Image (cartoon, rainbow, N blue to C red; front, side, top):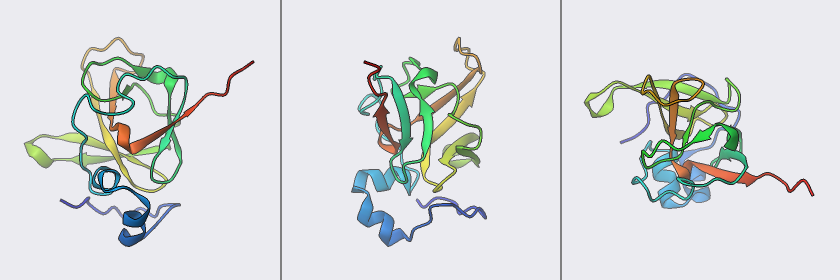
Length: 144
């Protein structure tokens, strides 16, 4: 299944061939074809490391460890993106339900979905359910 094209122009824009050359097959399947990692297998599901999570496709900074929380859903969860314009939202009606897809606003790559009103004790009542494979963690430099 291919991702829906948006009318948006991205700061980082590459051909399908270029993306395939730069990303592993698994990365390509999630980032460029809106696939989903299996739950509980992602590299960052239980990571507590402080730092910034960047888009694995283009390197744009997306989320910080400060907004990451344990949702026990099988994927890394955040309650807020780094900045309001770092991600974009696309209505997703695939799989017979209405969801909101989250994409990188810099390159349009698929990151995951955002859910609201699930009752987690977070400041936003949102859960950004993001595939580990869509991100690269840049650990915070040691202060000492």
